[in-house]
Structure formats: C-alpha cells, structure tokens
Image 1 (cartoon, one colour):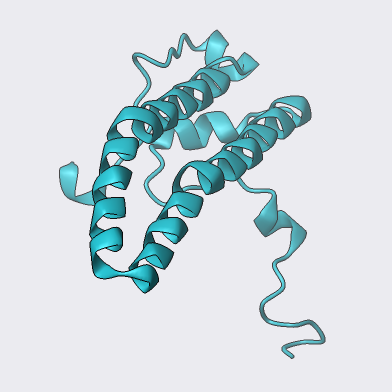
Image 2: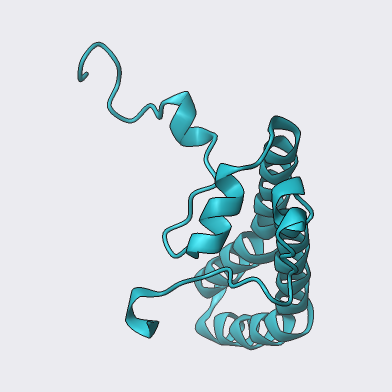
Length: 130
C-alpha cells in the first residue's frame, strides 16, 4: 500500500483518458476540447473496439498457442491458418475500427469548427519521424 491506497489501483482520472503515447498534437488538442457526451461516445467506442479485438486477435492467438500442445504439426498448420485469417478477416476489420475512431474524433464540435477531417488530420506523431 502506498498512501492508503493500493499502488495498482488507477485513479478515476487515469482511466477516463483519451491519451495515447504517439498521439499527434492536433488530436491531443481535439481531445482536450471534447464535451462530456463526445468524450463518453469516444470512450464507449474504445471499449467496444477493445472487446472486439479480444475476439478477433487474442482468442485466435490463444487457440494457435494451445494447438502446439497437441502437436507441432497441428501448431504450424494453425499458425498458417491464423496468418491467412489475419490478412483476410482481422486486418480489414481493425482498419474499419480505426477509420470509425478517426471519424468520431473529427465529428466533435471543436474539430468540425476547425475543418478537421479523417483524411487530413494527422493522428500519430512519432518522435523519430519529425
């Protein structure tokens, strides 16, 4: 315990965040000006996408890993099937989720007033690319 609370318990302000490590300054500015409804809608979208990713990526990876317990041959076949699944099903679905998140950010009142669109807004800023 640290200071009367458990050190691993996040504060409410930390769990209700739209922060991302490589978020661009433009997106950070938009997120700073979200009203309560827009923020809740964006957070719900993130929760929904997190649950979807668990089913689309984590569950199949778990099944592939478990298949190696059966036999190496079954494991390697399942790796190949997972690679095919990833290219045909998972990546297009993840791109659609990312596109929807970008649209949601650009639909905020503050972003619309400044003319931001998903096509023109820079969403990520990597320190080594500038």
